[in-house]
Length: 253
Image (cartoon, rainbow, N blue to C red; front, side):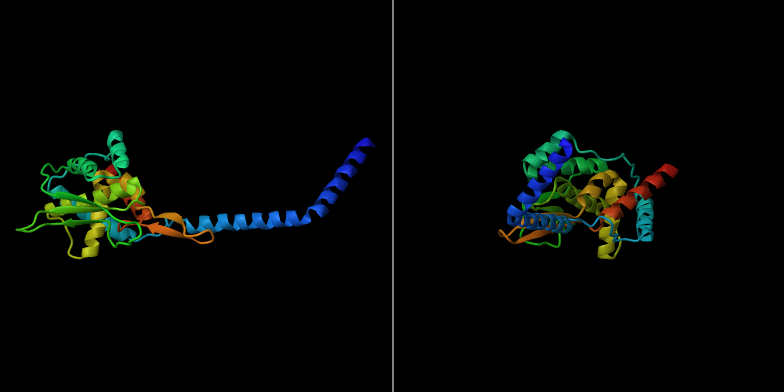
């Protein structure tokens, strides 16, 4: 009997409080609903594209076959997967990718490729995140009057992996073109360079560096937008597929 009395009392109190505070409860529910919508919209705006493929399987496989043939002809020896030492990683991040530290990384990258002659200039430029660029790095082959040069454009919003993937891509241009490996079509040559970065053992860094990244920016109290960054000529799924194909080829040798 006592239990029923307690239950009835509790129910009456709840009803009384609900009626007395109905406006506050309604306001809280509206606020809660807005918060849920905000979280949903934010997650949707920050969702990255990891599934879209830029290249069909046939193009990737024929590119790898071409690289395998050309690299064998110059006596290239695969040295395993490239790993950046932890101390250099810290130097790169803490220096905000200074020219000095990127030059250290460049030396390690080219050594892994089998290049001992550093006959190229490395230039690092810090650029604004507000200005959109169609490129994050450039390789100039040089001429009779100019030297070979790699230019890296560091955006403050780039991740560590993105900066590393940019210098790997441009270093691979240097490696391939110095050995006379190229195709006539400019865009296909860029695809071939990206495939080569994975073939040469830099797949781990290209996979992470070529991910699309998004950053939420608050313009005002009521307005927000997202800044998107994507470098490279392959997408995340392209890199992932290429790594599987190369692993299979090496396993069958």
